[in-house]
Image (cartoon, rainbow, N blue to C red):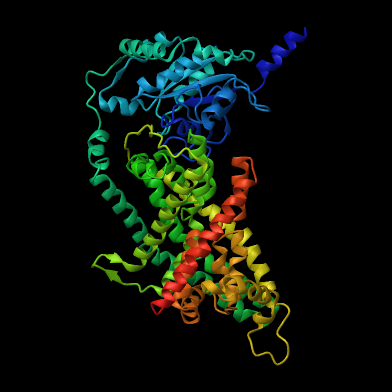
Length: 629
Protein backbone atom coordinates (compact mmCIF):
# COMPACT_ATOMS: atom_id res chain seq x y z
CA UNK A 1 0.00 0.00 0.00
CA UNK A 2 2.87 2.37 0.91
CA UNK A 3 4.49 1.75 -2.47
CA UNK A 4 1.23 2.59 -4.25
CA UNK A 5 0.90 5.86 -2.28
CA UNK A 6 4.46 6.82 -3.13
CA UNK A 7 3.74 6.21 -6.81
CA UNK A 8 0.61 8.37 -6.70
CA UNK A 9 2.48 11.18 -4.96
CA UNK A 10 5.32 11.00 -7.48
CA UNK A 11 2.88 11.20 -10.39
CA UNK A 12 0.95 14.06 -8.81
CA UNK A 13 3.92 16.36 -8.19
CA UNK A 14 5.09 18.89 -10.77
CA UNK A 15 7.48 17.16 -13.19
CA UNK A 16 11.01 18.56 -13.48
CA UNK A 17 12.29 18.71 -17.07
CA UNK A 18 16.02 19.27 -17.69
CA UNK A 19 17.23 21.00 -20.86
CA UNK A 20 20.56 19.56 -21.91
CA UNK A 21 22.74 20.07 -24.96
CA UNK A 22 26.03 21.22 -26.43
CA UNK A 23 27.07 24.87 -26.08
CA UNK A 24 25.68 27.06 -28.89
CA UNK A 25 22.66 24.80 -29.54
CA UNK A 26 20.10 27.41 -28.42
CA UNK A 27 19.26 25.68 -25.16
CA UNK A 28 19.13 28.82 -23.03
CA UNK A 29 17.08 30.63 -25.69
CA UNK A 30 14.58 27.75 -25.56
CA UNK A 31 14.52 28.01 -21.77
CA UNK A 32 13.70 31.72 -22.06
CA UNK A 33 11.01 30.97 -24.62
CA UNK A 34 9.37 28.37 -22.36
CA UNK A 35 9.50 30.32 -19.11
CA UNK A 36 9.59 33.94 -20.23
CA UNK A 37 12.62 34.35 -17.94
CA UNK A 38 15.08 37.09 -18.76
CA UNK A 39 18.17 34.96 -18.86
CA UNK A 40 21.43 35.84 -20.57
CA UNK A 41 21.62 34.43 -24.11
CA UNK A 42 25.09 34.64 -25.66
CA UNK A 43 26.60 33.08 -28.75
CA UNK A 44 29.63 31.39 -27.22
CA UNK A 45 30.34 28.26 -25.23
CA UNK A 46 30.18 28.35 -21.47
CA UNK A 47 27.74 31.22 -20.85
CA UNK A 48 25.42 28.99 -18.78
CA UNK A 49 27.52 28.22 -15.75
CA UNK A 50 24.84 28.62 -13.07
CA UNK A 51 21.73 26.65 -12.21
CA UNK A 52 18.64 28.25 -13.78
CA UNK A 53 15.17 26.99 -13.04
CA UNK A 54 11.79 28.21 -14.26
CA UNK A 55 8.22 27.02 -14.61
CA UNK A 56 5.56 27.03 -17.29
CA UNK A 57 2.15 25.59 -18.09
CA UNK A 58 1.60 23.50 -21.22
CA UNK A 59 -1.28 24.10 -23.69
CA UNK A 60 -3.20 21.29 -21.94
CA UNK A 61 -2.82 23.01 -18.59
CA UNK A 62 -0.11 20.73 -17.17
CA UNK A 63 2.44 22.53 -14.95
CA UNK A 64 6.14 21.85 -15.46
CA UNK A 65 9.36 22.94 -13.85
CA UNK A 66 12.29 23.29 -16.20
CA UNK A 67 16.01 23.29 -15.42
CA UNK A 68 18.57 24.87 -17.75
CA UNK A 69 21.76 22.88 -17.30
CA UNK A 70 25.25 24.07 -18.31
CA UNK A 71 26.23 23.18 -21.87
CA UNK A 72 28.23 19.96 -22.25
CA UNK A 73 29.84 18.05 -25.09
CA UNK A 74 29.90 14.81 -23.13
CA UNK A 75 28.89 13.40 -19.75
CA UNK A 76 32.51 12.27 -19.37
CA UNK A 77 33.16 15.63 -17.75
CA UNK A 78 36.39 17.53 -18.39
CA UNK A 79 35.29 20.94 -17.01
CA UNK A 80 33.46 22.01 -13.82
CA UNK A 81 30.34 23.01 -15.75
CA UNK A 82 30.17 19.59 -17.46
CA UNK A 83 30.61 17.97 -14.05
CA UNK A 84 27.61 19.94 -12.73
CA UNK A 85 25.49 18.72 -15.65
CA UNK A 86 26.61 15.11 -15.20
CA UNK A 87 25.94 15.09 -11.44
CA UNK A 88 22.47 16.69 -11.76
CA UNK A 89 21.40 14.17 -14.42
CA UNK A 90 22.65 11.25 -12.31
CA UNK A 91 21.07 12.61 -9.12
CA UNK A 92 24.47 12.89 -7.39
CA UNK A 93 24.27 16.51 -6.21
CA UNK A 94 23.26 16.88 -2.57
CA UNK A 95 19.99 18.73 -2.17
CA UNK A 96 19.36 18.72 -5.91
CA UNK A 97 16.37 16.85 -7.28
CA UNK A 98 17.17 14.61 -10.24
CA UNK A 99 15.06 15.48 -13.31
CA UNK A 100 12.05 13.36 -14.28
CA UNK A 101 12.79 13.68 -18.00
CA UNK A 102 15.46 15.07 -20.31
CA UNK A 103 14.89 17.32 -23.30
CA UNK A 104 18.05 17.04 -25.39
CA UNK A 105 18.45 20.21 -27.48
CA UNK A 106 20.59 19.81 -30.62
CA UNK A 107 21.75 22.19 -33.33
CA UNK A 108 20.21 20.93 -36.58
CA UNK A 109 23.14 22.32 -38.58
CA UNK A 110 25.70 20.38 -36.53
CA UNK A 111 24.16 16.98 -35.72
CA UNK A 112 27.46 15.15 -36.19
CA UNK A 113 28.80 16.81 -33.03
CA UNK A 114 25.54 17.03 -31.07
CA UNK A 115 24.29 13.45 -31.35
CA UNK A 116 27.17 11.98 -29.33
CA UNK A 117 25.72 13.52 -26.15
CA UNK A 118 22.24 12.25 -27.07
CA UNK A 119 23.47 8.67 -27.33
CA UNK A 120 25.32 8.95 -24.02
CA UNK A 121 22.19 10.15 -22.21
CA UNK A 122 20.15 7.32 -23.71
CA UNK A 123 22.41 4.81 -21.96
CA UNK A 124 21.26 6.19 -18.61
CA UNK A 125 17.75 4.88 -19.30
CA UNK A 126 15.83 8.05 -18.42
CA UNK A 127 12.69 9.34 -20.21
CA UNK A 128 13.85 11.80 -22.87
CA UNK A 129 12.98 13.53 -26.12
CA UNK A 130 14.96 15.43 -28.75
CA UNK A 131 14.41 19.10 -29.62
CA UNK A 132 15.79 19.60 -33.13
CA UNK A 133 16.61 23.30 -32.83
CA UNK A 134 17.65 25.79 -35.55
CA UNK A 135 15.80 23.83 -38.24
CA UNK A 136 15.22 27.09 -40.10
CA UNK A 137 18.97 27.60 -40.51
CA UNK A 138 19.43 23.97 -41.62
CA UNK A 139 16.78 24.40 -44.32
CA UNK A 140 18.39 27.61 -45.57
CA UNK A 141 21.65 25.74 -46.02
CA UNK A 142 19.93 22.93 -47.93
CA UNK A 143 20.34 20.32 -45.16
CA UNK A 144 17.42 17.88 -45.38
CA UNK A 145 16.54 16.12 -42.11
CA UNK A 146 13.87 13.41 -42.03
CA UNK A 147 12.47 13.99 -38.55
CA UNK A 148 10.32 10.87 -38.57
CA UNK A 149 13.26 8.68 -39.60
CA UNK A 150 15.50 10.30 -37.00
CA UNK A 151 12.85 9.58 -34.38
CA UNK A 152 12.75 5.93 -35.47
CA UNK A 153 16.55 5.58 -35.45
CA UNK A 154 16.90 7.08 -31.97
CA UNK A 155 13.77 5.49 -30.53
CA UNK A 156 12.69 8.71 -28.77
CA UNK A 157 10.27 11.53 -29.69
CA UNK A 158 11.83 14.20 -31.95
CA UNK A 159 10.31 17.69 -32.40
CA UNK A 160 11.45 20.68 -34.45
CA UNK A 161 12.03 24.00 -32.65
CA UNK A 162 13.24 27.50 -33.51
CA UNK A 163 14.00 28.95 -30.09
CA UNK A 164 14.70 32.52 -31.25
CA UNK A 165 11.28 32.94 -32.91
CA UNK A 166 7.96 33.46 -31.16
CA UNK A 167 6.00 30.21 -31.22
CA UNK A 168 9.12 28.21 -32.02
CA UNK A 169 8.61 26.17 -28.86
CA UNK A 170 5.02 25.05 -29.54
CA UNK A 171 5.92 21.61 -30.95
CA UNK A 172 7.92 20.87 -27.81
CA UNK A 173 5.05 21.96 -25.56
CA UNK A 174 2.61 19.65 -27.33
CA UNK A 175 5.12 16.79 -27.12
CA UNK A 176 5.42 17.33 -23.37
CA UNK A 177 1.64 17.16 -23.11
CA UNK A 178 1.76 13.75 -24.77
CA UNK A 179 4.41 12.54 -22.34
CA UNK A 180 2.74 10.05 -19.96
CA UNK A 181 2.63 10.86 -16.25
CA UNK A 182 4.65 8.29 -14.40
CA UNK A 183 6.69 7.77 -11.29
CA UNK A 184 10.23 9.09 -11.27
CA UNK A 185 12.72 6.84 -13.05
CA UNK A 186 16.21 6.91 -11.54
CA UNK A 187 19.15 7.09 -13.93
CA UNK A 188 21.38 4.08 -14.40
CA UNK A 189 24.93 4.35 -12.96
CA UNK A 190 27.29 6.67 -14.86
CA UNK A 191 29.43 3.67 -15.71
CA UNK A 192 26.79 2.86 -18.34
CA UNK A 193 28.19 5.70 -20.46
CA UNK A 194 31.48 3.86 -20.87
CA UNK A 195 29.86 0.60 -21.95
CA UNK A 196 30.27 1.84 -25.54
CA UNK A 197 33.55 3.35 -26.69
CA UNK A 198 33.80 6.84 -28.14
CA UNK A 199 34.76 5.35 -31.52
CA UNK A 200 31.66 3.10 -31.58
CA UNK A 201 29.51 6.05 -30.53
CA UNK A 202 30.80 8.14 -33.42
CA UNK A 203 30.21 5.26 -35.85
CA UNK A 204 26.61 5.08 -34.61
CA UNK A 205 26.24 8.84 -35.10
CA UNK A 206 27.41 8.52 -38.71
CA UNK A 207 25.01 5.62 -39.33
CA UNK A 208 22.05 7.58 -37.96
CA UNK A 209 22.93 10.65 -40.05
CA UNK A 210 23.30 8.54 -43.20
CA UNK A 211 19.80 7.18 -42.63
CA UNK A 212 18.00 10.36 -41.59
CA UNK A 213 19.80 13.37 -43.06
CA UNK A 214 21.01 14.46 -46.49
CA UNK A 215 23.81 16.95 -47.04
CA UNK A 216 23.87 16.61 -50.84
CA UNK A 217 22.45 20.11 -51.33
CA UNK A 218 24.29 21.70 -48.44
CA UNK A 219 25.56 24.97 -49.84
CA UNK A 220 27.78 25.53 -46.85
CA UNK A 221 27.21 28.86 -45.23
CA UNK A 222 28.39 32.39 -45.30
CA UNK A 223 30.23 31.77 -42.03
CA UNK A 224 33.04 29.89 -43.77
CA UNK A 225 33.54 32.69 -46.29
CA UNK A 226 33.55 35.35 -43.59
CA UNK A 227 35.99 33.32 -41.50
CA UNK A 228 38.44 33.28 -44.41
CA UNK A 229 38.84 37.00 -43.70
CA UNK A 230 38.12 37.22 -39.96
CA UNK A 231 40.52 34.39 -39.04
CA UNK A 232 43.25 35.38 -41.49
CA UNK A 233 46.60 35.46 -39.62
CA UNK A 234 47.28 39.04 -40.74
CA UNK A 235 43.91 40.61 -41.51
CA UNK A 236 42.18 39.01 -38.48
CA UNK A 237 44.25 40.68 -35.72
CA UNK A 238 44.14 44.03 -37.55
CA UNK A 239 40.35 43.77 -37.78
CA UNK A 240 40.07 42.87 -34.07
CA UNK A 241 42.20 45.86 -33.08
CA UNK A 242 40.14 48.15 -35.33
CA UNK A 243 36.86 46.94 -33.80
CA UNK A 244 38.11 47.48 -30.24
CA UNK A 245 39.46 50.90 -31.21
CA UNK A 246 36.11 51.99 -32.68
CA UNK A 247 34.28 50.80 -29.57
CA UNK A 248 36.29 53.10 -27.31
CA UNK A 249 35.94 56.01 -29.73
CA UNK A 250 32.16 55.56 -29.60
CA UNK A 251 32.14 55.54 -25.78
CA UNK A 252 33.06 59.25 -25.81
CA UNK A 253 31.51 60.38 -29.09
CA UNK A 254 28.04 58.82 -28.75
CA UNK A 255 27.56 59.49 -25.05
CA UNK A 256 27.83 63.27 -25.16
CA UNK A 257 24.14 64.08 -25.81
CA UNK A 258 22.54 61.67 -23.28
CA UNK A 259 25.09 62.70 -20.64
CA UNK A 260 24.04 66.33 -21.11
CA UNK A 261 20.39 65.33 -20.65
CA UNK A 262 21.12 63.47 -17.42
CA UNK A 263 23.26 66.26 -15.97
CA UNK A 264 20.60 68.81 -16.92
CA UNK A 265 17.95 66.84 -15.05
CA UNK A 266 20.09 66.44 -11.94
CA UNK A 267 21.00 70.13 -12.07
CA UNK A 268 17.32 71.10 -12.15
CA UNK A 269 16.63 68.99 -9.08
CA UNK A 270 19.57 70.54 -7.26
CA UNK A 271 18.50 74.09 -8.12
CA UNK A 272 14.96 73.30 -6.99
CA UNK A 273 16.25 72.02 -3.64
CA UNK A 274 18.52 75.05 -3.19
CA UNK A 275 15.70 77.50 -3.98
CA UNK A 276 13.08 75.88 -1.73
CA UNK A 277 15.14 74.84 1.30
CA UNK A 278 16.76 77.01 3.93
CA UNK A 279 20.51 76.74 4.44
CA UNK A 280 21.43 74.02 6.89
CA UNK A 281 22.60 70.43 7.31
CA UNK A 282 19.59 68.93 5.51
CA UNK A 283 20.11 71.04 2.38
CA UNK A 284 23.83 70.34 2.53
CA UNK A 285 23.13 66.60 2.69
CA UNK A 286 20.71 66.72 -0.24
CA UNK A 287 22.67 69.10 -2.50
CA UNK A 288 26.29 68.31 -1.68
CA UNK A 289 26.00 64.73 -0.45
CA UNK A 290 23.29 63.16 -2.62
CA UNK A 291 23.09 65.31 -5.77
CA UNK A 292 26.78 66.15 -5.66
CA UNK A 293 27.84 62.54 -5.09
CA UNK A 294 25.23 60.30 -6.70
CA UNK A 295 24.62 62.69 -9.61
CA UNK A 296 28.30 62.64 -10.52
CA UNK A 297 28.18 58.84 -10.90
CA UNK A 298 24.81 58.66 -12.64
CA UNK A 299 26.05 60.87 -15.47
CA UNK A 300 28.30 58.07 -16.75
CA UNK A 301 25.45 55.60 -17.36
CA UNK A 302 25.35 56.33 -21.15
CA UNK A 303 29.04 55.51 -21.56
CA UNK A 304 28.66 52.23 -19.66
CA UNK A 305 25.63 51.21 -21.74
CA UNK A 306 27.40 52.04 -25.01
CA UNK A 307 30.33 49.82 -24.01
CA UNK A 308 27.94 47.00 -23.10
CA UNK A 309 26.02 47.46 -26.34
CA UNK A 310 29.09 46.69 -28.42
CA UNK A 311 30.13 43.73 -26.26
CA UNK A 312 26.64 42.22 -26.45
CA UNK A 313 26.45 42.70 -30.23
CA UNK A 314 29.83 41.07 -30.74
CA UNK A 315 29.02 38.06 -28.60
CA UNK A 316 25.51 37.61 -30.01
CA UNK A 317 26.63 37.69 -33.64
CA UNK A 318 29.29 35.02 -32.98
CA UNK A 319 32.47 37.09 -33.26
CA UNK A 320 33.86 36.61 -29.76
CA UNK A 321 34.93 32.95 -30.16
CA UNK A 322 36.85 34.06 -33.28
CA UNK A 323 38.60 36.68 -31.19
CA UNK A 324 39.55 33.88 -28.76
CA UNK A 325 41.16 31.94 -31.61
CA UNK A 326 42.98 35.03 -32.86
CA UNK A 327 44.39 35.69 -29.39
CA UNK A 328 45.22 32.05 -28.64
CA UNK A 329 48.77 32.40 -29.97
CA UNK A 330 49.35 35.61 -27.98
CA UNK A 331 47.90 34.10 -24.81
CA UNK A 332 49.84 30.90 -25.44
CA UNK A 333 52.99 32.99 -25.13
CA UNK A 334 52.19 33.51 -21.44
CA UNK A 335 51.05 29.93 -20.94
CA UNK A 336 47.29 30.50 -21.20
CA UNK A 337 44.77 29.04 -23.61
CA UNK A 338 42.61 31.17 -25.88
CA UNK A 339 39.65 29.74 -23.93
CA UNK A 340 40.59 32.20 -21.18
CA UNK A 341 39.63 35.04 -23.54
CA UNK A 342 35.89 34.71 -22.87
CA UNK A 343 36.15 34.94 -19.05
CA UNK A 344 38.59 37.81 -19.43
CA UNK A 345 36.30 39.61 -21.85
CA UNK A 346 33.40 39.16 -19.41
CA UNK A 347 35.58 40.90 -16.84
CA UNK A 348 35.42 44.11 -18.87
CA UNK A 349 31.83 44.32 -17.66
CA UNK A 350 32.57 43.11 -14.14
CA UNK A 351 35.25 40.81 -12.77
CA UNK A 352 32.69 38.69 -10.88
CA UNK A 353 31.01 36.99 -13.90
CA UNK A 354 34.44 36.73 -15.55
CA UNK A 355 35.82 34.85 -12.56
CA UNK A 356 32.78 32.54 -12.52
CA UNK A 357 33.08 31.92 -16.28
CA UNK A 358 36.61 30.58 -15.70
CA UNK A 359 34.90 27.31 -14.71
CA UNK A 360 34.81 26.44 -18.42
CA UNK A 361 38.62 26.14 -18.50
CA UNK A 362 39.71 22.52 -18.25
CA UNK A 363 43.26 22.89 -16.94
CA UNK A 364 43.19 23.72 -13.17
CA UNK A 365 46.30 25.93 -13.31
CA UNK A 366 44.97 27.83 -16.33
CA UNK A 367 41.70 28.30 -14.47
CA UNK A 368 43.43 29.66 -11.36
CA UNK A 369 45.67 32.03 -13.33
CA UNK A 370 42.66 33.31 -15.27
CA UNK A 371 40.84 34.02 -12.00
CA UNK A 372 43.86 35.87 -10.62
CA UNK A 373 44.25 38.16 -13.66
CA UNK A 374 40.54 38.72 -14.44
CA UNK A 375 40.35 41.85 -12.21
CA UNK A 376 43.10 43.48 -14.29
CA UNK A 377 40.63 43.76 -17.15
CA UNK A 378 39.15 47.26 -17.01
CA UNK A 379 35.65 46.76 -15.55
CA UNK A 380 32.84 49.24 -16.15
CA UNK A 381 33.20 50.61 -12.60
CA UNK A 382 36.52 52.20 -13.60
CA UNK A 383 34.95 54.04 -16.55
CA UNK A 384 33.52 56.99 -14.52
CA UNK A 385 36.96 57.64 -13.00
CA UNK A 386 38.67 57.43 -16.39
CA UNK A 387 36.08 59.69 -18.00
CA UNK A 388 36.37 62.34 -15.28
CA UNK A 389 40.18 62.53 -15.31
CA UNK A 390 40.45 62.30 -19.11
CA UNK A 391 37.92 65.11 -19.55
CA UNK A 392 39.87 67.29 -17.10
CA UNK A 393 43.38 66.80 -18.51
CA UNK A 394 43.11 65.50 -22.09
CA UNK A 395 41.96 67.99 -24.76
CA UNK A 396 38.82 67.01 -26.70
CA UNK A 397 40.27 67.28 -30.18
CA UNK A 398 40.67 65.23 -33.31
CA UNK A 399 43.84 63.39 -34.17
CA UNK A 400 44.56 62.53 -37.79
CA UNK A 401 41.23 63.99 -38.86
CA UNK A 402 39.06 61.11 -37.62
CA UNK A 403 40.27 59.99 -34.17
CA UNK A 404 39.26 61.51 -30.84
CA UNK A 405 42.24 62.10 -28.53
CA UNK A 406 40.22 61.29 -25.41
CA UNK A 407 39.09 58.03 -26.98
CA UNK A 408 42.71 57.22 -27.81
CA UNK A 409 43.72 57.68 -24.17
CA UNK A 410 40.84 55.49 -23.00
CA UNK A 411 41.90 52.81 -25.47
CA UNK A 412 45.47 53.04 -24.12
CA UNK A 413 44.25 52.53 -20.55
CA UNK A 414 42.30 49.41 -21.50
CA UNK A 415 45.29 48.14 -23.45
CA UNK A 416 47.57 48.76 -20.44
CA UNK A 417 45.30 46.58 -18.31
CA UNK A 418 45.48 43.78 -20.88
CA UNK A 419 49.28 43.97 -21.12
CA UNK A 420 49.54 44.00 -17.33
CA UNK A 421 47.32 40.92 -17.11
CA UNK A 422 49.49 39.05 -19.63
CA UNK A 423 52.68 39.88 -17.70
CA UNK A 424 51.12 38.76 -14.40
CA UNK A 425 49.87 35.56 -16.05
CA UNK A 426 53.39 34.83 -17.34
CA UNK A 427 54.79 35.26 -13.82
CA UNK A 428 52.10 33.15 -12.11
CA UNK A 429 52.41 30.32 -14.63
CA UNK A 430 56.13 30.08 -13.99
CA UNK A 431 55.76 30.30 -10.23
CA UNK A 432 53.06 27.64 -10.12
CA UNK A 433 54.50 25.53 -12.95
CA UNK A 434 52.64 24.14 -15.91
CA UNK A 435 53.74 26.84 -18.35
CA UNK A 436 53.15 24.51 -21.31
CA UNK A 437 50.56 25.91 -23.71
CA UNK A 438 47.38 23.83 -23.93
CA UNK A 439 45.90 23.80 -27.46
CA UNK A 440 42.57 25.58 -27.79
CA UNK A 441 39.51 23.51 -28.75
CA UNK A 442 36.43 25.69 -29.15
CA UNK A 443 33.34 25.38 -31.32
CA UNK A 444 32.80 28.33 -33.65
CA UNK A 445 29.09 29.11 -33.97
CA UNK A 446 27.60 30.36 -37.22
CA UNK A 447 27.35 34.11 -37.68
CA UNK A 448 23.91 35.63 -37.40
CA UNK A 449 22.36 39.02 -36.87
CA UNK A 450 22.01 39.98 -33.20
CA UNK A 451 18.53 39.46 -31.80
CA UNK A 452 17.23 42.92 -30.96
CA UNK A 453 14.90 41.73 -28.21
CA UNK A 454 17.68 39.89 -26.39
CA UNK A 455 19.95 42.90 -26.85
CA UNK A 456 17.34 45.29 -25.45
CA UNK A 457 16.64 43.02 -22.47
CA UNK A 458 20.35 42.66 -21.68
CA UNK A 459 20.92 46.43 -21.85
CA UNK A 460 17.90 47.07 -19.66
CA UNK A 461 19.15 44.53 -17.12
CA UNK A 462 22.57 46.23 -17.08
CA UNK A 463 20.97 49.66 -16.64
CA UNK A 464 18.79 48.29 -13.83
CA UNK A 465 21.82 46.82 -12.07
CA UNK A 466 23.69 50.13 -12.34
CA UNK A 467 20.72 52.21 -11.17
CA UNK A 468 20.09 49.83 -8.28
CA UNK A 469 23.73 50.19 -7.30
CA UNK A 470 23.44 53.98 -7.51
CA UNK A 471 20.25 53.99 -5.43
CA UNK A 472 21.52 51.64 -2.72
CA UNK A 473 25.23 51.11 -2.22
CA UNK A 474 26.49 54.35 -3.77
CA UNK A 475 23.75 56.47 -2.14
CA UNK A 476 24.54 54.95 1.27
CA UNK A 477 28.26 55.58 0.85
CA UNK A 478 27.67 59.16 -0.32
CA UNK A 479 25.58 59.89 2.80
CA UNK A 480 28.29 58.35 4.98
CA UNK A 481 31.02 60.36 3.23
CA UNK A 482 28.98 63.56 3.58
CA UNK A 483 28.56 62.91 7.30
CA UNK A 484 32.26 62.16 7.82
CA UNK A 485 33.19 65.19 5.70
CA UNK A 486 30.89 67.56 7.60
CA UNK A 487 31.37 66.67 11.28
CA UNK A 488 32.85 67.91 13.46
CA UNK A 489 32.71 71.41 12.06
CA UNK A 490 35.63 73.79 11.66
CA UNK A 491 36.85 75.42 14.88
CA UNK A 492 36.56 79.16 15.36
CA UNK A 493 39.20 81.04 13.43
CA UNK A 494 39.90 78.11 11.11
CA UNK A 495 41.88 78.95 7.99
CA UNK A 496 41.23 75.73 6.09
CA UNK A 497 37.93 74.54 4.51
CA UNK A 498 35.57 72.86 7.02
CA UNK A 499 36.20 69.39 5.56
CA UNK A 500 39.86 69.70 6.57
CA UNK A 501 38.83 69.44 10.24
CA UNK A 502 36.27 66.66 9.75
CA UNK A 503 36.70 62.93 10.43
CA UNK A 504 37.19 62.34 6.70
CA UNK A 505 39.81 65.08 6.55
CA UNK A 506 41.76 63.54 9.42
CA UNK A 507 41.56 60.10 7.79
CA UNK A 508 42.66 61.53 4.44
CA UNK A 509 45.69 63.27 5.96
CA UNK A 510 46.71 60.03 7.71
CA UNK A 511 46.51 58.07 4.44
CA UNK A 512 48.33 60.82 2.56
CA UNK A 513 51.52 59.81 4.35
CA UNK A 514 51.40 56.53 2.39
CA UNK A 515 50.16 57.96 -0.91
CA UNK A 516 52.04 61.26 -1.05
CA UNK A 517 55.01 59.65 -2.91
CA UNK A 518 52.64 58.89 -5.82
CA UNK A 519 51.11 62.36 -5.86
CA UNK A 520 47.80 61.73 -4.06
CA UNK A 521 46.55 64.50 -1.77
CA UNK A 522 44.30 63.89 1.21
CA UNK A 523 41.17 64.52 -0.87
CA UNK A 524 42.04 61.69 -3.27
CA UNK A 525 42.88 59.43 -0.32
CA UNK A 526 39.39 59.94 1.11
CA UNK A 527 37.87 58.94 -2.24
CA UNK A 528 39.94 55.73 -2.38
CA UNK A 529 38.45 54.33 0.85
CA UNK A 530 34.82 53.89 -0.30
CA UNK A 531 36.22 52.70 -3.63
CA UNK A 532 36.96 49.43 -1.86
CA UNK A 533 33.21 48.77 -1.92
CA UNK A 534 32.59 50.09 -5.44
CA UNK A 535 35.18 51.78 -7.64
CA UNK A 536 32.80 54.20 -9.30
CA UNK A 537 32.07 55.72 -5.87
CA UNK A 538 35.40 57.56 -6.13
CA UNK A 539 33.91 60.13 -8.50
CA UNK A 540 30.96 60.82 -6.22
CA UNK A 541 33.27 60.89 -3.22
CA UNK A 542 35.43 63.55 -4.88
CA UNK A 543 32.31 65.64 -5.52
CA UNK A 544 31.32 65.40 -1.87
CA UNK A 545 34.85 65.86 -0.54
CA UNK A 546 35.31 69.10 -2.44
CA UNK A 547 31.98 70.20 -0.92
CA UNK A 548 30.55 71.53 -4.17
CA UNK A 549 27.23 73.32 -3.86
CA UNK A 550 26.49 72.88 -7.57
CA UNK A 551 24.72 69.82 -8.88
CA UNK A 552 23.99 68.03 -12.11
CA UNK A 553 25.65 69.68 -15.10
CA UNK A 554 27.36 72.20 -12.84
CA UNK A 555 28.96 69.35 -10.94
CA UNK A 556 29.97 67.54 -14.11
CA UNK A 557 31.47 70.71 -15.58
CA UNK A 558 32.75 72.23 -12.34
CA UNK A 559 34.41 69.20 -10.79
CA UNK A 560 36.35 68.70 -14.01
CA UNK A 561 38.05 72.15 -14.10
CA UNK A 562 38.35 72.10 -10.30
CA UNK A 563 40.52 69.01 -10.28
CA UNK A 564 42.34 70.37 -13.33
CA UNK A 565 43.28 73.41 -11.24
CA UNK A 566 43.89 71.51 -8.01
CA UNK A 567 45.93 68.60 -9.37
CA UNK A 568 49.06 68.55 -11.43
CA UNK A 569 49.13 66.59 -14.67
CA UNK A 570 51.49 64.16 -12.92
CA UNK A 571 48.89 63.49 -10.22
CA UNK A 572 46.16 62.91 -12.80
CA UNK A 573 48.29 60.45 -14.76
CA UNK A 574 49.27 58.72 -11.51
CA UNK A 575 45.61 58.27 -10.57
CA UNK A 576 44.86 56.77 -13.99
CA UNK A 577 47.77 54.37 -13.57
CA UNK A 578 46.48 53.47 -10.08
CA UNK A 579 43.04 52.59 -11.42
CA UNK A 580 44.47 50.45 -14.21
CA UNK A 581 45.85 48.08 -11.54
CA UNK A 582 43.81 49.11 -8.48
CA UNK A 583 42.96 46.46 -5.85
CA UNK A 584 39.61 44.78 -6.32
CA UNK A 585 36.34 45.63 -4.58
CA UNK A 586 35.43 43.43 -1.60
CA UNK A 587 32.62 41.59 -3.42
CA UNK A 588 35.08 40.38 -6.07
CA UNK A 589 37.47 39.11 -3.43
CA UNK A 590 34.64 37.17 -1.80
CA UNK A 591 33.80 35.53 -5.15
CA UNK A 592 37.45 34.54 -5.56
CA UNK A 593 37.31 32.91 -2.12
CA UNK A 594 34.19 30.99 -3.13
CA UNK A 595 35.61 29.85 -6.47
CA UNK A 596 38.99 28.78 -5.06
CA UNK A 597 37.65 27.57 -1.69
CA UNK A 598 40.56 29.33 0.00
CA UNK A 599 41.38 32.70 1.59
CA UNK A 600 44.93 32.44 0.25
CA UNK A 601 44.07 33.55 -3.27
CA UNK A 602 41.89 36.62 -2.51
CA UNK A 603 44.57 37.85 -0.10
CA UNK A 604 47.25 37.21 -2.73
CA UNK A 605 45.12 39.05 -5.31
CA UNK A 606 44.60 42.10 -3.09
CA UNK A 607 48.29 42.18 -2.17
CA UNK A 608 49.78 41.89 -5.65
CA UNK A 609 47.30 44.35 -7.16
CA UNK A 610 48.03 46.96 -4.47
CA UNK A 611 51.76 46.56 -5.03
CA UNK A 612 51.36 46.68 -8.82
CA UNK A 613 49.13 49.77 -8.66
CA UNK A 614 51.50 51.57 -6.29
CA UNK A 615 54.59 50.83 -8.37
CA UNK A 616 52.83 51.82 -11.63
CA UNK A 617 51.59 55.09 -10.07
CA UNK A 618 55.02 55.86 -8.57
CA UNK A 619 56.80 55.36 -11.90
CA UNK A 620 54.13 57.35 -13.76
CA UNK A 621 54.17 60.21 -11.25
CA UNK A 622 57.94 60.53 -11.08
CA UNK A 623 58.34 60.26 -14.83
CA UNK A 624 55.66 62.92 -15.43
CA UNK A 625 57.35 65.25 -12.92
CA UNK A 626 60.70 64.74 -14.61
CA UNK A 627 59.12 65.68 -17.95
CA UNK A 628 57.57 68.84 -16.50
CA UNK A 629 54.08 67.51 -15.69
